[in-house]
Structures are given as C-alpha cells and as structure tokens.
Amino acid sequence: MMKYLQNLGRSLMLPVAVLPAAAILIGIGNWILNFAADSTIATFLTNGGLAIIGNLGILFAVGVAIGMSKEQDGAAGLSGLVAFLVVTNLLNVGGVAGLQGIEESSVNPAFESIENVFIGILSGIVASMMYNRFSEVRLPDALAFFSGKRLVPIMSAAAMMVVSAALFFVWPVVYSGLVSFGTGISDLGAFGAGLYGFFNRLLIPTGLHHALNSVFWFNVAGIDDIANFWASEGEKGITGRYLAGYFPIMMFGLPAAALAMYHTAKTKRKKQTASLMMAAGFASFFTGVTEPLEFSFMFLAPLLYVVHAALTGLSMAIAAMFEWTAGFSFSAGLVDYTLSLGVPIANQPLMLVVQGLVFGVIYYFLFRFLIVKFDLKTPGREDDADEQGEEVGEAESLDATDGAEKDETAEMAEKIYEGLGGDENVTTVDNCVSRLRLEVNDMDKVDQDKIKSTGVPGINVVGKHNIQVVVGTQVQFVADEIRKLRKK
Image (cartoon, rainbow, N blue to C red; front, side, top):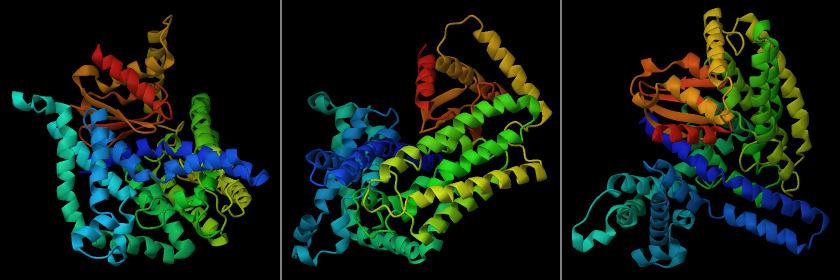
C-alpha cells in the first residue's frame, strides 16, 4: 500500500511540473499590467496562464494515468482524459439535474465543483488500472481492432460509468468532509497554517505530502490557494497563506542550514561537502526544490529534520499572522517569488525576504549548535568507516573513468546501476522530480558506498525491495541513462 501511495505521489509531479508555465505567463502579464493597464499583450499572456490553471483536473487525470501505468504509455493518458470526461459530464450540474428530474438550481452544490483535481486524480488512477489490466488483452479476430491498447480507453469509460454511479451518492458526503477538514484548518488561522507546514515537511520522506498539499493548494476542499493567488481572486493577505511561509525556508533557511553543515564537516571532507551543499543550497534558493538538501540529512540526523519541520511550521504561522503573502506554482524559490511580486493580490511580499533573513540566521546557528552538541552525522561528519568506504569508491570511480570519454551523466548512471546490482538485481526504474525510485530483487546486493561515491545527496531504503536514490533536478537524465543500460 505504501509503495502504491508513493507511486501516486510521484505521478502527481508530472502535472505539477506544468504549472511553472502558467506562473511565467501570468507573472509576466501582471508585470506588464503594472505599467500598462490596457495592454493587449498582458491580457493575452495572462489568459494563456489562466487556461492552464483552469484545467488542472484534466492535467491531473492525464498525468496520473501516465505516471501510474506500468509502461507510462500515451494510451494511458488518453484513457485518463476519457475517464475524466465521462465522470464530469455525467455528474455536472446539468447531468445530475437530468438524473434526478429536478431544476439545476436545486442540485447539491457539491456537483458544481465536480471538475476538480480530486476527480482528476481518481480518473487517472482508474485509467492506469485499466491500462495495466487490459493493454495486452487479445480479442477474437472479429474484434481484433479493439485489442490491446485500443481496448484501454473503452474499458476506462465503462469503469468510470460505474465509479460515477457510486460518486452520485458518495461525492456529496466526501466533498463535505474535505471542505470540513480544510475549513477546520482555515478556522485555526495562522496556527492552522503552521500545523499544515509542519506536517507537510514530516511527510516528505514518504512522498505523501502531495496528498496534504492537494487539500490546500488545489480545489479539493474549496481553498485552491495556487489558482486563486495567480488569478488574483480572494482576500488580500489571506489568499496565498498556505504558500507564502515556504519562501523564507526554501530561499534562506535551508541554504543557511547547508552552510552550517559545511562549516561543521570534518576538515578532510570539507571540499566534498562543499560541492554537495552548494549545489543543493542553490537548488533550494533558486528553484525551491529542497529534496536534494533535505535527504542529505533527514536520515543521517532525524533530530535536525524534525527541527526543520517545526521551523517550517513557525514560518508559515508568522507569515500568515502578519498577512504577508506571495505565491508559487511549482515551488517557493527565487523564480516563483520574483514572478509573484507583480500579482495584485500579493501583500507585502518584500517582508518575506526580511523574515527569510531572520530565519536564515536561526537555521545557521541552531543547526550548527545541534550538530556540534550532539555530534550529529550530517554530510561530512560520517564515521571513519563510512569515510574510508567512500574514499575507496571515489578512487574506483576515478580509475574507471580515467581516459574515458563518457558523458558525466552516463558515468553517474553506470556507477549507480552497478551499485544497485545491475540487470540481475534491478527490476524496475522510475523517477520523480529529484529521486530515482527503484525496485530490486535483493537489497543485500546493493552497494550503497558505490552509489554514494557518485556524489548523490542521499539514499533512502523504503522496504525490502524498494530503494530511492536522491539525485537532484537532473534525475530524469540519469534515469534515462539507466534505462539505456537495461536495454543493452
């Protein structure tokens, strides 16, 4: 079950990765509107971005269907679209009014929001199940045209008819529950925003933080913070409250933590630690992708990670308390922060920089104190045995690549694949935004020292047969190289 939920979390990153396009278009459009209120170009760009934001349900249906299907095939994506169209047309206000024989004005309000991310995710899951089950089915010769992948959209439509019948009764109850949950957090004001930030970070290791995010960022429970912020709808100082507090953490706090870990590293390992912390810290500051940095210490020093989660909650609460708001579409880095400055509903966003500078100081000195006080094994402070293993791995890596003309990414992929046990041990290869997600036959055959010698930020063993290798934002290219090795 955990593996399935983690795969779902990884699949959600495919549609989420589309959102920066919307942010760029809307952000540039709003910047232009600051100087020319009647600009046709600004309207053109803004409407283009809103077209993406306004169809998130479809994006999630297609993205989840592809990500959850066993071959990540385009036929699964088409089936996800079919499933979404079936349920949203059967259960829209007009469809429900016709089924119940009542006026549209009397339909339960839950059905006014049927084209949402939750339904998109459900449609994608159903379509992926149909793909995994029917994509290789052979029908009798008379129906052979509809065999295999052509059968999947048909079965997805049929399955979604059944699901729609259940949702006809269940959706009003589920919708009310989600709204109550979101409203419960919202009613807690700044404290609720702090609780959300705290649990968001704690769920990062499992990949289940995406499920929590969907309640507050998208239109699952009526909050829809991302879309409302970029559309500049809602209440100034309130809309964006579940986004703003991340900027001080990702742009300042975590990079300061990286500096603290570098300064506390053992002398003979400072150079190696510097390269890791510099790259991970810059990724956090510029793009808001924090996993390479967080995974570098969350398992080595779990105490630090709990402190990090608590500080994230505190940052969210403070930003919400003072009603300082800015927004992001992908993550809370410099790019999204800059784009959000031109959005009319942003409220005192420059104060988030001031807050960030304060949190940077807190992160640096608190992390440095805890690392030294409790001798925490952060990067560069591992035991001597681990250091020797990694030094041997580095030497082997240098010997293997001496005089070679291989691409750097290919070299890393080859070394990681060897460390995993190669063809005999690796059964599946997948990736999310920053991690390789792999299945192996025998975890005892995995050579973690060899994998670490490539300079990856971290390794996470999540079961007897499942392991994650944190690579960073270039993970897709490493995964592609590993797939090439598997085809040889």
